Image (cartoon, rainbow over all chains, first blue to last red; front, side, top):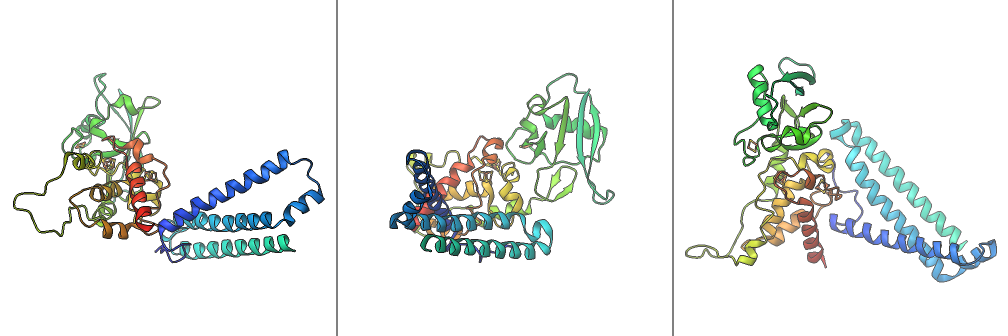
Length: 121
Length: 234
Ligand code: SF4
Ligand code: SF4
Ligand code: FES
């Protein structure tokens, strides 16, 4: 049986809210980054490095990375509990779902840690 | 002659379901799909389906007609037929008992979960519990549901998790009692819905709205429930 112990927040509502808030953060980040690329003059190594050495940009980028991780986890958790289930695949659905969720968590964790290293490295 | 492709399955004799091609003489009239079934049953009495009122009131004859769920008794052939062929299947996503008859247990279980009855812990008034016309109007578009299951069996989220997602029909009824000024169990009703499956498996695809033969809008009701959950949490 599919249970909800692996979901992100405390409840369906918190997952739903986090999903929406992180989407807004990502939208804002893409707009700001897109604006800089389009209207901020030529993108060079120096200008890019200068941009990402500013504290606000680092924090903003970190927020975007954490948002991606949370957003992806909630979304892929929902996908896995829709399709990788005992109902659809028999008992192996439960095993596959856990493997899938473990791979997603590991990948997201690596991305975040790696991203922080790049930002503050 | 009308070409009909029928989903047939008799668990006692058939190993697997199959589609049967049959022809029926409609006399050139644009009959209701249920009339076509009655003609077909006269040709072959083993054909099995549910029906009762034949006027869109009882909700027994929900079917999948050329890919779209609806009530056979109030759907004219011309509304669903494609490529000169009428394709009739049982409602998707529920176990088939025989031919066009599905096992609705899971559907009713979800309905039962929302406690579809008035709960009021206040002392009973001498005559009846009154409701203002405005409060009564809040139930319009909710109480008319005939539990035909056309919506829930058109909903992918219900297909994948029929045991945990309440589905559009059950949620419409959940909201019908959440919205009732005479009901005092709002808090415990909401508490029961605040898990990741019961309500939040709805992704707003609106299949439910597009098939409801009574023209109801479960997606809007689900939005209202979400709003109430949000208000309760903040
Ligand atoms: S709007 Fe929600 S309940 Fe309606 S069909 Fe889509 S997912 Fe199902
Ligand atoms: S909401 Fe409409 S489609 Fe769904 S069960 Fe009620 S009447 Fe049928
Ligand atoms: S037979 Fe009653 S709704 Fe169609």
